[in-house]
Amino acid sequence: MSPLIQCPTCRAWLLEGVFNRPDLTPCRSCGTPLQVEVFPALFRKILPGQSAQAVLVEGESSCFYHPQKKAVVPCAGCGRFLCALCDCELNGQHFCPACLETGKSKGKIKTLENQRTRYDTIALGLAILPVLIFYLTIVTAPMTLFVAIRYWNAPQSIVRRTRFRFILAIVIALLQIGGWTAFFILIATSK
Amino acid sequence: MAEPKYQRLTRERTPARFAVASIARSSLWLGDDHLLFVECTGYTETYKRFYFRDIQALTIRKTITRAVWNWIAGSLAAVCALAVFGSWRADGLDSGMAIFFSIVLLFFAILLALNNLSGATCACQIRTAVQTEELPSLCRLRQTRRVLDKIRPLIVAAQGQLTAEEVSARMLETIQAENPTEPPEPASPGSAPPVIS
Image 1 (cartoon, one colour):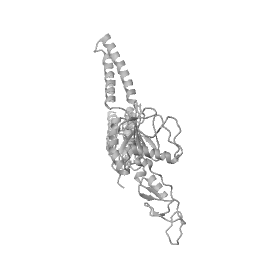
Image 2: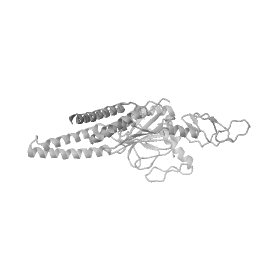
Image 3: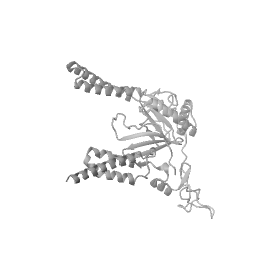
Image 4: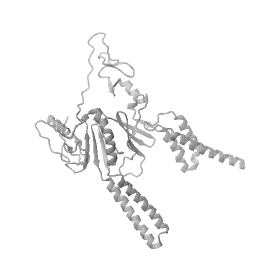
């Protein structure tokens, strides 16, 4: 990506006058008030990828995936030797492509995790939303209990880590089940 | 592995600028070495991490959203005030219509006051080597500056600092290094970008 920055409004290239100023400064082209904070990473050169070197000396450690290539680093996940081509660096750690893929799919590498399902919100939604059509709660209340218990230990949101929604959903579901039980007992006893 | 702890930087906001009710919400959180951008779409959360060492630029642009909301809320409040006045003239202040329009008027007046108390609106973009991402939760200038004051020292600690003059000089340097025979063109809308490989 080019180290030049465009005005978000008029797409003109910003060359000077608006960078790292304490206040908003109008864009020279369109006059939109802008404040652009630029950091040294903008001018950092992206190094070209390394090519793997061939094993020259007999007995030299070689890559697990490319036996004819020289190993440069062990994988932090599985410990296999990797050549420069197979070495995937992530936050200072070196992984092989297989471990990277496994780490992402199984959520073992937390920094690669980019999505989570909020089972607590699902349980709460199941408990609250059907109240609008009350008869649905006879089905959704047990479903709420199932979801809350089944996913009680499932990974929660990265940023909010309370089980309040689960507890609230369980309480509401128990009340609904209690209500239905009382209703059926009342019908049975009145006959 | 223990999960990292995050500190809330912004409350959840809808990505659409003029949306009143939307399921999708986004918020910004501060981690040890990165900013976490959380997009919540109902029952799933999507995360984007911006490491302090990778953040290239933050762009804040003042927007007219506050003025637009002022016009909308102000116009509706004025209509309600007229309706209250009309009902009062016709049936007196204790009529049902007057009470109803007074409540609606109060709602729009509160909306108007809150919109102005929150300060000027803005749009914020964060740029890394691979993407430029809009941060919808940073929509008020005062709040954006507060967040920026909090994260700037962390980015500076990870990368170092550049003054305004250094940035301009390095940008001109980059352009001249790529096109040594051509002087840099002045910025103009729609013009072709300087050639940078």
